[in-house]
Image (tube, rainbow, N blue to C red; front, top):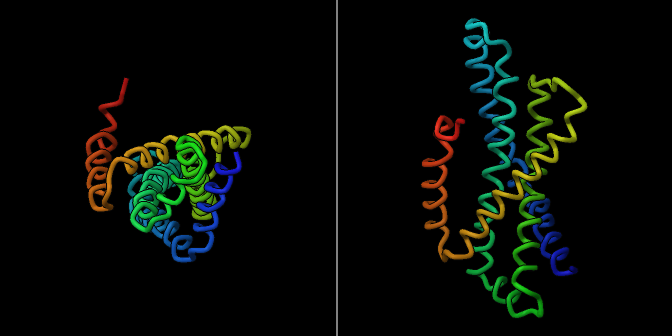
Length: 185
């Protein structure tokens, strides 16, 4: 259990020590909110659909969580290339505990970034309709982060280079997550 905690804590320490990562994680959602929210907001209102931030906010939050979670797999490839993963694998710890610790750490980072984006969307203009559903939304955010972090780490555990990982993730997301009608009931 301590190995899971150590790997989880390592991911959090790496995240909070990287100021560029903290600022950069808010850059893309802010760009989408400003460009799309203020750019298309008046058109959306004229069409009679209401506030565009209410429509755009949840998608930007989920997109931030999804990409942060999936690209936590790059940390596994990075650790493999620089020897940290080899040192971890020779420790008297099961591989399951290593994967669980890295997955929980990556999911926590993705959740924290999603929470920051949620606060950012609220500052820009997103309003929560029912305050009682916020705990349920936070649980859903963490589960999304956990699933996509596990997906990214499981794919990265097979691959050996970062470019291949990025190409596979690009293929996966452009194929399955850009066609919402495909998943309709």
